[in-house]
Amino acid sequence: MRLCLWKCRTGTGKSLTAIAAAGALYKAEHINRVLIVAPLSILGVWREEFEKFADFNYILVVLTGSSIRKAETLQGLNNKNLQVAVVNYESAWRLEKELAGWNADLIIADEGHKIKTHNISASKAIHRLGAAAKYRLLLTGTPVTNKAVDIFSQYKFLNPAIFGNSFYAFRNRYFDMVGYGNHTPVLKKSMERELTERMHSIAYRATKAECLDLPETTDIIRKVELEPRAMKLYRSLVKESYAELSDGEVTITNVLTKLLRLSQLTGGFIGSDESSDVEQVSTAKLDVLEDIIDAALEENRKLVIIARFVAELEAICRLLEKRCVNYSLIKGGVKDRDEQVAQFQNDPDVPVFVGQIATAGLGITLTAASTMVFYSLDYSMSNFEQTKARIHRAGQRMPCIYIYLTAKGTIDEKVLKALKNKANLARTLVDDYHYGLNPFI
Image (cartoon, rainbow, N blue to C red):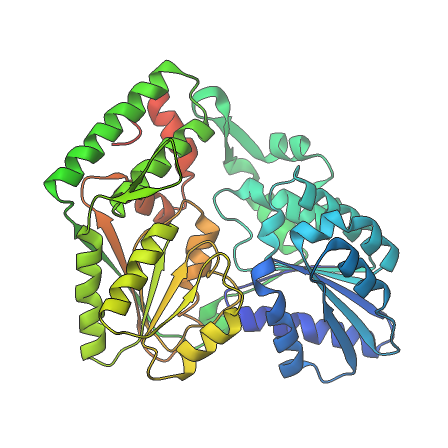
């Protein structure tokens, strides 16, 4: 049985390696069926990658539609060539019985950090499916997003012999639990070498520097001054959020819920507890963004703009439409992702790409631009790193610039600092509170 973790910062590098491995195993008559499990947003990318790189006979289907339709498509996949089925993580655990019956010889977990949480349904299903397969391959550029404990679940899929089957035995061996309530795992200094050696025993890592001649990157933090009225509203919300924490149980969920409203406000919007409607309370970031867009257009440069919230995306799109600037857009609910990317990459009359960080950070190439503006950020290290890689990847020849719009004196600064330092923001904020500090300042 052969198992491997492939760590690479380039999407094409990962898929090419996986396709080459599948082809070699197929030609050696070791496999007939391949199951690829990937995030929903990039399922179609695998069809494109096979068309570009596979030099062997195969038939590939992407499982879509209802569960019944997916099961029927899988059952109909019977061919003398290599059979490849591509499915998303959510569907994989719901179709676990059918996938187990299909009996894949090789299972490829793409963006494998998606199963970093060991006790969720998707991870458990992938563990069970992997245990029955002859070969397993996990692909990710971020095996460790916030903390080293993330690797357990991924290695349980690859080979439980490396770190065992018990998460708690693994955690107790390699980590000290620190922070308020002893909830934060910190890798023991005495165990760093052993953990690294065990990880590398079945892993292959290729960095951008090693496999690609990519240009340098530059980070620019643009401090944005919220209008006096918006800043007054922000401070009031900070005070209210802190008071509410004092009156109830302080948990990560509670802290992040309150942090969400503060982050929305720094982007210019605030919601109501009674409805889903949002009110625009600031245009400070939009005004700065408009200047950045103007400069890019004057210099005939393409621009990628990333934001977190739907209201922000809609406001950015209205700004572009008002300026008669054509743009591509990927957010939740957009179906023609490939078309949107293609027109930005290839059409000189489409100078701007607008993307939602949670949905536009995987499986796409945006190298037509060398500048990316983060209008707002979420708290996911994985989303942060993956989104940045959309412009800094194979095919990029220009130095890449990342511009972060941060509202001065707000939670924006804390979020960006945590992401850059690879810190667990939620746990840090909870600890701040328990140590007598206001976590939102």
